[in-house]
Length: 196
Image 1: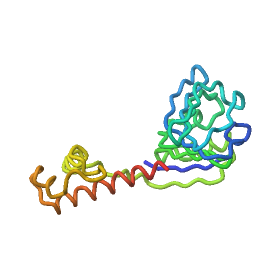
Image 2: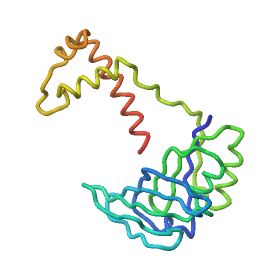
Image 3: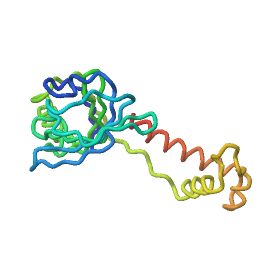
């Protein structure tokens, strides 16, 4: 399995006019209805309106420091629709400087078709291909340590529990708790940062 990163300019699409950064949180595809639904976050309110591939804006609102837009996009001729039709698994999508960045998973035998499909609708600026190496899941011990630390208030300010007392509760030494905590935080951090 390959992890493919594509950066492309999709001229004529609303994304080519958008010069602020957005990150897609979720997508649902409805090819028979010729649209897909996207929920995208921005740091400020984007100037989006119907047309150039946007079928309808369902919701646009600020939540904390983030602006969230929920909208319907035209499926045919879109990067998302093309990738979906190619059968890849979409990992993430970012928008910035008029460009679309996609990270997808595909088998090696599908790589040529993916490149050809995207090149047929957009100007590919950059493409990188790497073997897919997923982060290992948290172990049962790492999960137990994290749950206990959260439950007893280790991450509160001020802390309501010490690592020594968590270790006693779990039947572990402090150094074992620290070992599992560091491993869990590393895995979570790597996985989270890959989203951005």
